[in-house]
Image 1 (cartoon, rainbow, N blue to C red):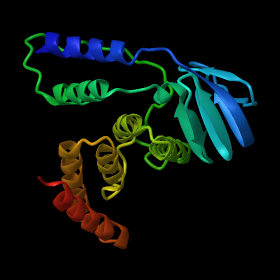
Image 2 (image 1 turned 180 degrees about the vertical axis):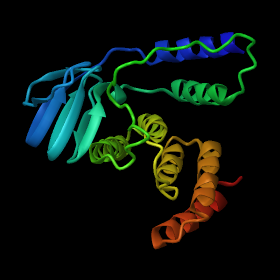
Image 3 (image 1 turned 120 degrees about the horizontal axis):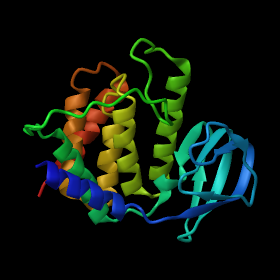
Image 4 (image 1 turned 90 degrees about the horizontal axis):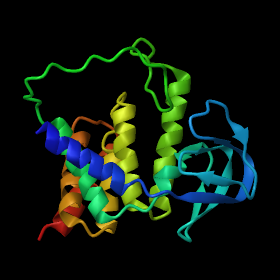
Length: 233
């Protein structure tokens, strides 16, 4: 099982490893960029070329990027995105990603003891310390990344958005959103003509909204039921 999981993980990384770049075609307001693993941000400017290891952050501002595949991408205020999140993702790569998630959830029956890792320093995207659940900076970062994922959806990069939303939920598992992200995932699968996966996502929306007592959750549950009926063969 370990070997199979390793093969899938390596294959997925290779499949998603195609290099890409993006050029800032328009910058307005407060927009910053971060190069690679640097911790410091610098002011963005029109004409700058960004590599996939770079990150862009729009505070009170907006950025328009020209991707090397010919697409134009717009990122609005209070949004953060890694340039690598804009790479073209095929259906096969999306399938491999979900297969890797399923494999990760399988119980490990290996007889080998787990490897012990020493302490590591904080890296980009690290979650909060368990003793600081109300960390304002961490919550702000979570919101910025969430807005970045939503921008992927709004720009029609549905497969990219699905993967980004899943990563965000793994990175920031703090408060339930009553199916808000899951409903966007369901809509994205519909756009990709993946009816089966869309139905599964809408059913999870019903589960996630069951104990939520607010009008938005009720509307989300009603929408989920309608879409399940519509998508069922």
